Image 1 (cartoon, one colour):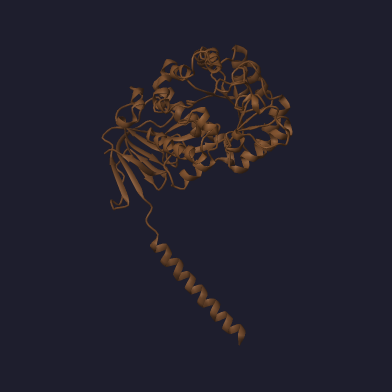
Image 2 (spheres, rainbow, N blue to C red; image 1 turned 135 degrees about the vertical axis):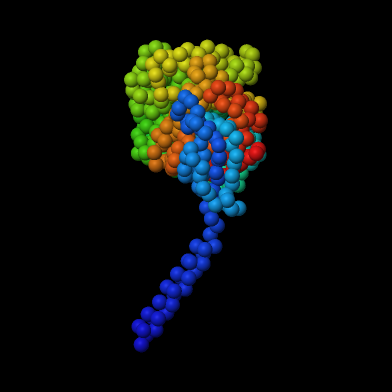
Length: 451
């Protein structure tokens, strides 16, 4: 008798659950549709625009691309955008960005109020998106919280591929302590820059593994190390190679165990070659590389993340300061680096590396447009879309946004810009996004619709 009662109650429960599930499914809102009509497409790879096409976005994915009209239910859940022959292209990608270091000066970034700095970074993230940059690879900074806030819709901003804290050595690029902070006590309390997650000191292979694994634990999609000296750090000469091969190898091994890669800040041939020898996947900058090093990068299939740094960034360092002296050493190498890249056909990503300047950040698109010193507009735009997306995909399963980025094709994630004009003919259009980007879409959501 008891078993019959239990069975009856069990069946009644199943019926109730099924009815609830059916009602819940019926209550779910329809998947939003966006139809771009009469657009010419730059797909992130080609050197010409397509003929006039129609593009349907379903949810956050490009569902259909057709020269023929696409029939849709023109209900409230469907947005129709009359392209009028404008250019539809992928959202732009900046492969060398520091979200937490754009607006504050160095002192504010390190010693300032953390909450204030986070709010300022959130405001800059919104501005970054509204400049048409729907994705950034953040290569150093306490950006995990900002990424989460963007992903959850708390603030607007680009997709962020975070490195977390820069891993450096005592006296390396990223060590912003003062001489009064020395000597470092092994096992002692963390310095201020480490406490806020800007950079982490790691001396010796074991400590490198620890610091790398901490960033991966927090959600790093790739790891950033400083294999040589840098411009902005006060006690890091440009010519110095910092990590030993054993230390670099420990980082590469730890990252590979997580299915991702290490990117290394390096200017000089010695720093670059040491990083390559232990399996680093990508070199940041490389401005002072020589012919032999460029040839090695090409032969090994190493990525080079290069930046056409504007003169205003160099001039932003006070005349006579150690940072200005080091900048004067580095800047002449930018043009020669691009010439070597083209000569040896090196896999090249593009980024800005803007630091401590909101004014320069506003010129993000103009910095991209400056690539026409060495490339055609189509080549420059392909680098900042389809090519940069290939580098992002090197994060493997640590990729926080599974799906195809940087292209306009069926099945790709819907990060799209509608441009008033043809940027393959006039690349300066991207330098004025307020006027020329009439629609900005990220992940299928429209953030700007000037039509």
